[in-house]
Image (tube, rainbow, N blue to C red):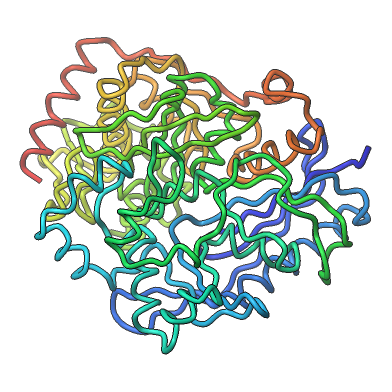
Length: 492
């Protein structure tokens, strides 16, 4: 059997190629950034050829770094920045426009018009999403309406649409596979969440011709084989795909309903496995497909806090009370508590479950005795409390308690933050040995399809814990902190 699984993690600012063996030993890791394009305020674009070049380069360098040959690769998996929208010609695979990135806000007015027309309730019921420029539907409509000849070409079947997974699968297979997986399709505003298929009513609402769409497939199956690449030999199976946050959920082995993971980056993304049927939220959470693999489908609830690591960056760059992000933990540990200070990190408004874009950051409880150490600790508490609000909303909506809470992302290395999170949630917080769980999820999905791992039980056996944080805060202290937090959020 071939030795390795190649996971391509195509992110917003760069591409990472990870080469793993069956025991999850990382044999190579290569990252390459690419250029961001900002043609107007609020517009964000990516050059698809630049993305593709980064994939070819990182894959080739990963093989060289590991001293491996192409035939040593058993499977290729893809995980990707979600919602980013690509449109290209079927005859030669050439993009007709730069990709419109998930962060792009150019379709704000179009979404507002649909909301004003009363379309959002049924769209939300059908898709699990809100009408927002974040998602792919209005981005694709914009491309069809603003790229000369695009709509007519799309209706004639000459153009192909996809999120980044689709574009990479097309290129990796030499144009043989125009596919997306259910997790990515569920982020487009075009798929019926329960049926897991493109919906004619949604296509009509957004003016999207069916001929432009990829085929929706499971997250773990052979979509095609590599062909005509500079970086990899022909014939390698491309056989795992999932959007980045869903891939992280799978990479954390959150296979049972109730299990959840949180990725702590600039913001915090929390997903909970809710089982084989979607759970629609009345608290501002999103319903999404987590994955489909081995004939089984799992759905998730998703919520995001806009500011997590960004709060630490603000303390560093805005206030100058720390010189590096790593300094915040020892500084915060130098005091036993936050000295009565509560920090609501609503520096970009409040996301789920509050959804108050007009909210602004609040620091309450300042006295002459407050030091920069108290502010540092209050910032970490504010991040943990923001995630607590998401987790509590999920617990109520799903009706499932979280047996444990798995974490990844850069800020999960902060032990004090993780302990605060465990104290607030009242369940263990589990940090994995391998924190690159997005790429790991893509590798697992691909490896299952290729027979590298025989099933999820084997994946659970090879998945390893780095550290487990158990709750230890006194209930009275916890309730006092939550009371201060709720008062501060109300004032934000």
